[in-house]
Length: 272
Image (cartoon, rainbow, N blue to C red; front, side, top):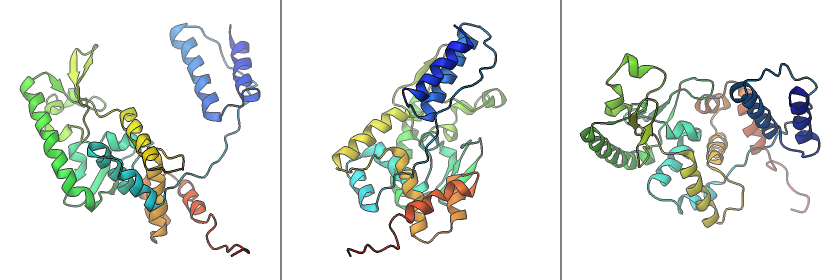
């Protein structure tokens, strides 16, 4: 099979299966990866693909009461992550990959490294989590001290920093704020690494909290980011400030939250 069969299958997904644009795109990328890297077969350029139309949906936004209902069904690290998520507007991966040196408890800011588009930015550290965060950091240090005593557990570093700074992977300031319970063995490097908590672990706990809190909206961890932006706008902050905190390249992306605010607001029903 080659380009023609791939084209027919990708078109079939859009025309007959009515999949979303992201699902179709994921299938195409998966097949192209298969041919290039596994089968090592050059299939050339594929023409006449009928792409699924990407639908624009307004983001799901929680009320403050719904946020509290979810939080009341979380505890420990999962609750702290949720508070940071909602209080700072970070993406889930950005939140879980925070390192000790990225949090400034005095200035109450978080430096987000390599956000979307590989850009760094600064966002707010909620005052309400500082005491809880200090206690959590002491536990992270205890875990770090145990790893140091064992002598063979390091933290992964971005890019090639481990070559530039050979000892950085064993320094406390490079440790993840939310480390995984068990280290992971890297077969290629033959090293044990203390990686960050996996996204799926938190997602399962968050989903369970949504169900326990009887929140009827289709809420995911990313919903907290949408709620952060919408609630800031409700509180009177300007859209450019919200754009900077979210790390959006264009203000047009941030403008979607003004549409959320305008849903039903300012229009009084004739029945009322």
